[in-house]
Image (cartoon, rainbow over all chains, first blue to last red; front, side, top):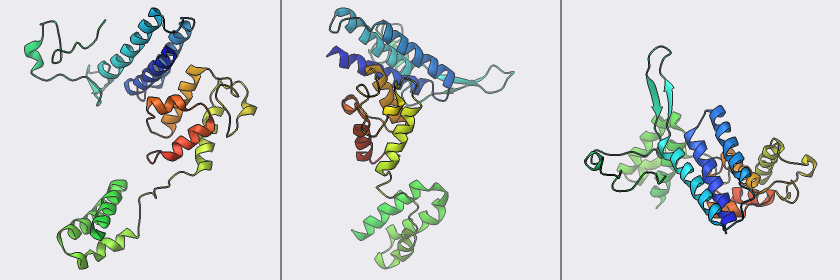
Length: 116
Length: 139
């Protein structure tokens, strides 16, 4: 059961790196290498254990974070400190109503953006 | 019904080939307003067919691309065992995480997204080939 879950988490993670680091081969391969390293280092965890479930949940959260809360920026010219951001369809976006709920301990219509 | 079919193909063609949008868009727009005898210009461009036919990928092509992809995958232990029927873990010595990476690479190669359930079931090259062939979006 949790073997499939781990594979699914790994797949989501790879997919998220593709979305987050599109066209940036260095970062993309570094992120994938790191993902692989982490999964390899936890290879011995017995499936179904609490530890395994926790690690899988962590991987899923990282995948979600990479997809929704990371954007790429490119300097528009060498001198100026201006960056062009690539905001894509998965990027988490708030709306003006969020300002009213800001600072009340939750974001985005009462849904916490990350449970860490 | 005939007119609908022409309109649909006109829309598909104009989407597939934006370069030709101006000449194509005109007959399509006209045929939606006028009656069937004025459809002739739309019918004449239909013979151009600048969009691809539904059966876009041949089995050999899909197989070749997947084999090429695996040839370049450095974790394949024995490249001589690569064949159209190779099993990822039994023949090629890949573990489950490698398999996920291969399936992900296949997704990128054919620019599709394979849902988790189907992706979990792909364990061999021929399964991957048959899945890609069953996807009309793959290219």
